[in-house]
Amino acid sequence: MVDYASLYKSKLVSAEEAVKVVKSGDWVHYGHFAMAPIYLDGFLAQRKDELRAVKIAAVTYPGLPQTAVCDPQRESFIFNDWHFSGGTRKLHDQGLCNYIPLLYHEGPALYERYHEPDVFITRVAPMDKHGYFNFGTSNSIHATTAALAKKVIVEVNDKVPYCYGGNDEAIHISDVDMIVESDNKPLAQVPSPTPNEVDQKVADYVMELVEDGSIIQLGIGAMPNAVGMSIAKSDLKDLGGHTEMLVDAYVDMFESGVMTGKRKAFDKGRMVFTFALGTQKLYDFMDHNRAVASYQVNYTNNPYLSSQHDKLISINNAIEVDLYGQVCSESSGIRHITGTGGQLDFIFAAFKSQGGKGIICMSSLKEGKGDKKSRIVPTLTTGGIVTVPRTITNYVITEYGAVDLKAMTTWQRAEALISVAHPDLRDELVKEAEKMNIWVKTNKI
Image (cartoon, rainbow, N blue to C red; front, side):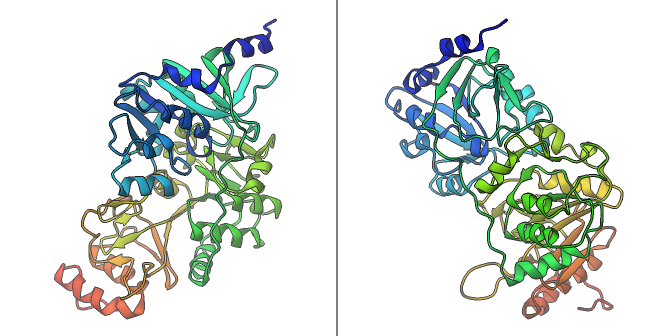
């Protein structure tokens, strides 16, 4: 019988010793989202004067990584993020972080085909009696990265919830090179934004498309959260959860009795996710709870798998949509805001699902002072990234209504989208549509 306690002690090292394995020129891959190794990042930053051209890859790093902040010339550390957080967005604006384009469900395949991580460092839950360290709130691409990495370092934190799988939700001590016991600081708290009046109006339109037995995928932001809150208060029956991101609203939907998962095609009774971000309420709910199931992203976001659920409803936010139906959800012109994430994965999957619906929801106006600026635009802002191509866009919803763009001509799309734009800006959009030859005499708004 293996003595895991002794094996643990043999691999236990100080933070200073652990980061010494990083060499100049290495690719260092961090754990994702709330499982980013915030503790060890600070110790690695202290080696700034010893290292050159260490490349770091993260996914939605919470806060500001010290390895980026300590080196404004980017001589020692070159920080990169597969999906921006508020912190890495600020760094990008300062030229201290670069984006790595990612179609999320392809993540494990990209690692297998293109990456050879020198070091993988991730936060984990304490080891269980069988020698496993649970990946906690972030499964994502962790198992694949760990399998490919030359060195694996786990940063143990007793605040990490133990999340059942699924698959690939843990790593065994035999596959770990070094163990570091961290400062056990709480996980990043990401409260759900409070929905405003516009968010609620949009949520009301979305609710008209949700049926008993629907399988719900929620994206990031106030509007998807408003939908989740509305669902939790509804009299809908036997909804299911299959999502990339688990948020506080899923706790509300489950505890209200609305989300039972009884009608799911598979993973019945369980809310499937690949990462979670929320408040302590969510993390406490996830801990040793068989109502949730942690999977790698090539399972959760695989459109050919998720679409096997009937009535898959994908609810995501956007920055702007042009009159052709192209959706930009990741940049404002050339300013990068976030990433593709799983939006395309799920919008595509939802339409393939029997009775499914892929929904882009947004306010009609962009935030900010001064003149009103429409989120429905003639063409995407120069430099804007197409997240969902016009061929895949399904529903677009604002506080002025819901339109389904599938199978529409360009002039029908223009009419539909202008009908849900802000009323004060519709005439100008019509003029632009005429210039673009996507408006005919019988069009109306």
